[in-house]
Image (tube, rainbow, N blue to C red):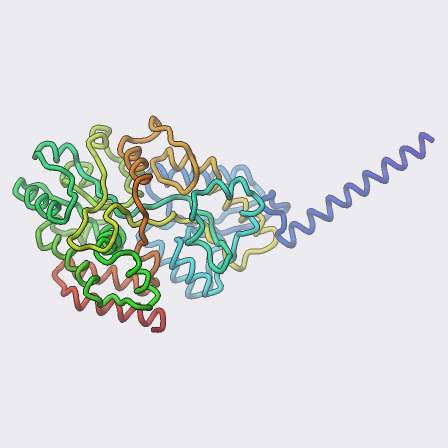
Length: 442
């Protein structure tokens, strides 16, 4: 009887081992082991743009290093590309169908272009395998990464793009208040110019700053969001319409009034932020990404002297003045060519870089996130806490380069550089419409 019992036990153990081995084999070949440790040695390429000294970039680089240390069976070939050149590099490899396995990707237009080019694959199975994580994101966090019900990334940040930062120190010194109307802003420009202080710092060398941080919100004040969405769809509105030309005219009015320092098209947004932090400008219009840069580089005294608000209303504007242009942040895109054990490993990294723990670290690094995290004000700068509070009181509106094709967005960016140097608004509006019409085939 004892012998029979031992034989039965051995038989059960053999069946168990065989069953487990079969399951591991299936997972490694089909990619069904969602987020499980890759069972074999695999290699993945990863591109990112976390090259700066800001706290968020450091957090993401540390997350990648920790992942490599904890997963010796996953070899990562990492390329860190500076932000200003990152999109151009990505477009080049996309055109050649030579995408890296994983890469930092923007929601909206970029995601749509990569999907239409059959370059990336959805991550629904990863999200569905971790419902607590999936449900921890803020409402609509996945909308700009989702096409036809398929979701292609999980956001790792939140990016309002048009915050109006101002120096309370300088405002108090000259006894002025933050602007509520367009006339208020022009009067501030005049006041600070007379005092030999740059009214608004601008670093538009990479061309996207004027578009993302100023025009996206300013144009919405003039046209309203519905007009912009119709123009994007090519259905009932065009960029040559009078309201958009008026928005361009307002932006040019700032330049003609001397709102920006000389050479604004020759310095980048990091230099712009330094200029503001050093008290050389009374205001700057920048995105949420500035908060982590300022936290890393500005003095506590400078940070404590900063305040933030939204752009002022415009006369007869159709848009909501209590709003900010913005998008959910970037996420990791996954190449269509990744499968099997490599896909399991890729899922692990996607989760690791957008996990609740990293979202919390990111928030405490003075970078906004699209995830439900309670903020401890003692862990962040005072200006970050103020922005965090502001976001709970305003509406988010679209960013131009988040909805337009890459080609049309480039024309907008270059057109605004021309506009700020004296170009005719009507001519620039026509260039934008022509490029957009070509992109959408209308």
